Every structure is written in C-alpha cells, then in structure tokens.
Length: 367
Image (cartoon, rainbow, N blue to C red; front, side, top):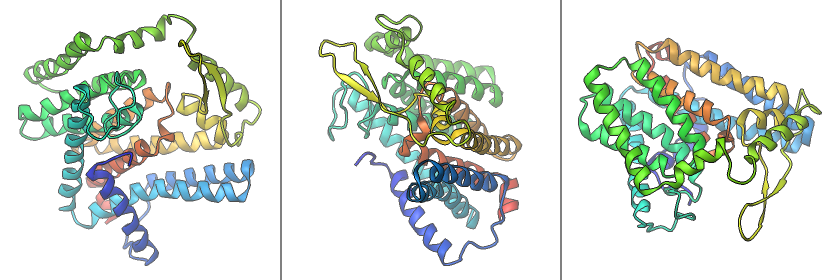
C-alpha cells in the first residue's frame, strides 16, 4: 500500500460507485460547465496524441486514464450537489486524513516508522515511500487546515496542525514543494485580508517549524542552496530542460509519446547510474509527450478551474485555498512533474471537485 488515508479509501470507493451510476444513467440533470468542457478537450487531446504516437491500444489506455481523472472530479461534484449535507462527510474525511498523514510524518521525524515507509532517514515520506508524493499531498492539507482555522472558530489547535503540516513539508526536503508553498502562502494571506493580530499569530506558528527545521535538519537548507550555487555540478534539471526542448521541437504538434530514459552519474562514492524518465518540469513533460495540443488542453483545464474559483470567491469559503494550492502546484511544476504522480493528481482533482461543488454558482448550474 502506498497510502493509508480515509480520503484515499473514500476516493476509490466513490469512483467505483459513480461509474456504476453513470452507466445506469443516474446522473440526473447535471448540465455541463466550462470545466466539464475543458476536461473533455483534455481527454480528446491526450487520446489523439497517444493514438498518433503509439497506436490505438496506447490511445485507448490514455483515454481510460484521462476519463478516470474526470470521474474523480465529477463524482465529488455529483456527490455534494446531490445533498449539501455530504459536504460535512467529505470535509471530515479530508480533515481526518490530514491528521493521520501529519501525525505519522511527525513520528517518522523521531524515527518511529512503524510501517517501514521511510526509505531515506533524512526525508519524511509519511505512508509513501516517496517524499515527493507525501509533500505533494501535504500542499493540499496545509491550505485546507489553514482555511479551516480562518473561516471557522479560529481555535489555536487548527493553526497548530497547519504548523505541524508545514514542518513535515520542510522535512521532506522537497525544494520544489517548499518554493510552491511559499508562493501559495503569500497568495493566501493577500486574498484572505486577515487582521493584524491574526497575521502575527500566523507568522508565529509558521516561523516556528522553520526555526526547528534549521536547528535539527540543516540539510534542507543545504539542498536549497545547491540550486543556486551547486557544490559539484550544475543542477541536472537544467540539462533535462534543454533535452526536453530539443525533443519537443522534433514533434511540435503531437509530441513524441514518451520521455526517453536519460542516464546521469550520481555524485556519490558508488558512482551509481540513475535513469531519469521525465523532464522534472510538468509543462515541458507534457510538451514532449503530448505536444502543443496536449499542453494547451492542460493549461486550459487549469485556467477553467482557476477562473471558476475566482468567480466564486465571495460565495465559496474554500476558493482562496484552492487558488493558493493551484499557485503552489504551478510553481512546483516548474521543477517537478506532479501530474505524473497519480496519488497527488487524484487527490488534487478530488479536492478541486470538493471546493467547486461548494460554489453557489456551480450548484445553481449543476442541480
């Protein structure tokens, strides 16, 4: 198992139930929105690219995978719009999942890894063996918890869990996620227009995990420093980006179908050879694999989501969180291929569906 969270269990059970209901024609009176159209364009673009590059079989596989992306989103919307009381169920599932994930990551920091999920002792990974997957999900948990504190009773315990979440993110040592989180937090505080006393309290809770990380885990900041002034060789990402662009220029419209496995020498005593199979950049990766049509469909999908969130700022208490999360992923995507991690992608789509279903405008369109 790569994830032990209630949200994950609810997600896959929900998808299965929704697909069955969809086949049985029980999707009652749900009209299409701009996001639905954007999803269909996304599915069509990636499917055509797959067929052209790798044949009908591969195209059909991509079709099923992209349809599953859409079902994750649309099932949550369907579930919440069917009965507004279901909002509490989804919210509670995310909240409990956040507590479990953060608590286990915190235990790993003290080397209590009961399920043996941590491969690198210097990098937290929660219930995942990959720190990147763990930190990608924590992006969503962080802004959800922060929003719960600001929009409800403002009990210190909510901000405390958000602070612990940030501590876990820092100690995954995922630099791309840390940069994304920084940008997202600035966005969140700007849109939230919080009072000075709340801002001071927030700064205290968020500077505390930074302080303790500096005291007990200095390798995080050494990794950040190596981006600007690498100790040995230039960051491998820069070479990968150049390779990605050269590959894309040969297949501009539909891409090449896959990113080639590129070896590079690890800077350690064993001189192991590691093969990289993605560009460490979500935008370049999609350009290489799916070409310009795939890239434009991907950008339009996120534009449609972001646009809907902006329009629902006054009516949707989760809209600010979603905007901040999307900004964090947009920044992270410059350095990582988060869309290729199914556990991060599905949770993000799940949360997008949850947030946008809370919009009064969207509910009026959908019901």
